[in-house]
Length: 240
Image (cartoon, rainbow, N blue to C red; front, top):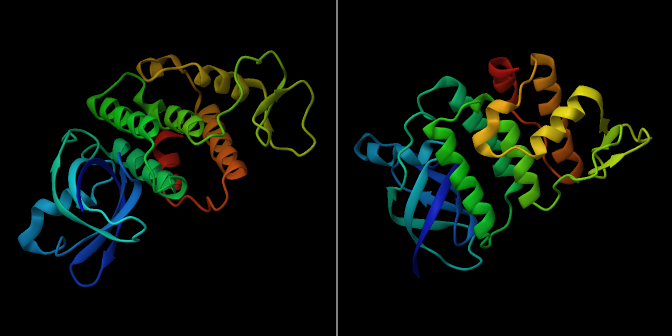
């Protein structure tokens, strides 16, 4: 059955001589995989947008419930990206976030709130916002809420944040997975930021790196199979 849906490109892998399998997070069906033929041939350069992470698409797809692979009938750009594909730092963030999302967005079902959050965040990041060097920190923090393991908020007058249990603690957790001091203070600030206020998060190089590592550890503790983040090293070099 042919269906119309919006979609966000996550990643792709080569398939046969000139085709790809592209993973797309869709508005109607959650994460789906699509075979696209001859996308890597010189005659189909227009399909190259399917190779760009975070591309926002309007799709016509052949959708078969429970199928592992689907096909795209037609697509067009919904919001042509004007900065993410062309600015080195933003490209690094795009590869980092799509690598994370490719690992954590596993549901093949509709989640309108999650889709809208990701879609709107990409639009703002591409358009440009003050403090966009903090975007990946904001995005990971907020994404955890949509995935069901968002950190506790509202009880923040304690000395530690327990990463394993997702809550604040008066005493140092015995398991060793916690943050405190400056990193916890910025974690608390991050919890209350909206995307238009990213420039309010002022971070030293060390604290920025420690905060990112805390967020990644938080994901590792709450999601199985996160594994190595290959794009992290490049991101650290640019932002941390």
